[in-house]
Image (cartoon, rainbow, N blue to C red; front, side, top):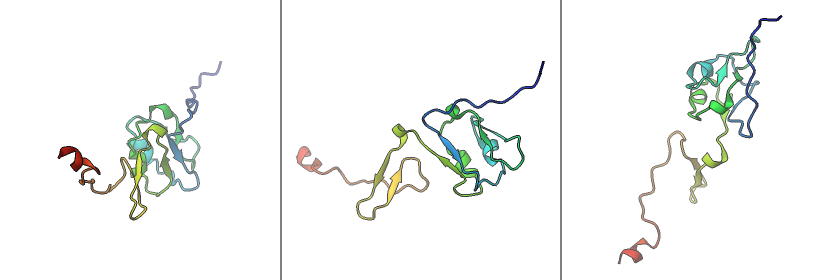
Length: 118
């Protein structure tokens, strides 16, 4: 009888929340160390990127992306119901909820509100 224990990842859900690019990953395992929910585990094969073992446990906090020293090595794919974004008409800039350095809030009242209050 074989008494070895194996880590087997959960089956991937339709939402693959964390994507690691193996070409860009520097295998520093900083994502493994900062993940609040232990979604990642170090790959037992040397030189390979971490394994996303529990994708369903991800809170989409973005710590793994923020602490990764290589830009673009880890990418978050938020579920469709969390992809809230808007585009500024004047400049064409695209913004989304939770991004770094969001634009200042629009303090202008909605169009037509002065007609309702008068």
